[in-house]
Amino acid sequence: MADPVFKLLMKDTVTIQRNTPSITTSGATTDSWTNVSGLVDLPCAIQANPSPRYNREGRMPEYTYAESMYTINLADQYSSILPRDQAVASDGNTYDIQNASSEPYGAFTVLLVRLIQR
Image (cartoon, rainbow, N blue to C red; front, side, top):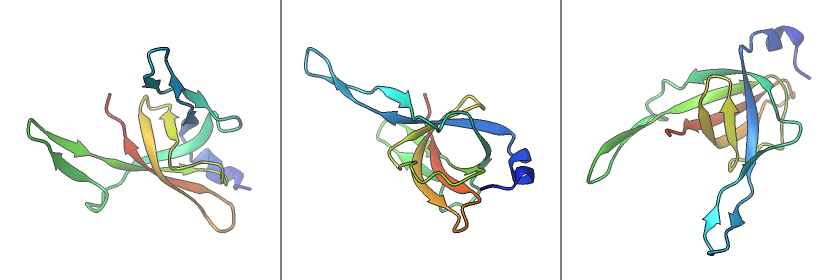
């Protein structure tokens, strides 16, 4: 259980979504992201990850792109969050969850996420 003071430091909220793909009548697969029960509007702190280890520049023949990693700190332990999930945040961004780890004493969960550019 997280310390109530720790939760006060969380200025954003995040909703965890899970993909349940469906198949159209033409046979194409479409993504369908739905909120995960119990993981809606969770208090959190979102911060850019300044380490060059987690930020990189990619090159394609037609263009160059930047891939930015962020850290989302959640004020409790949430072991049901999976790397294939996505986080929709109150800052207006959607993040692809790369890794989810809980602090050993259950006080918080740390998500390593990649910003999804839309």
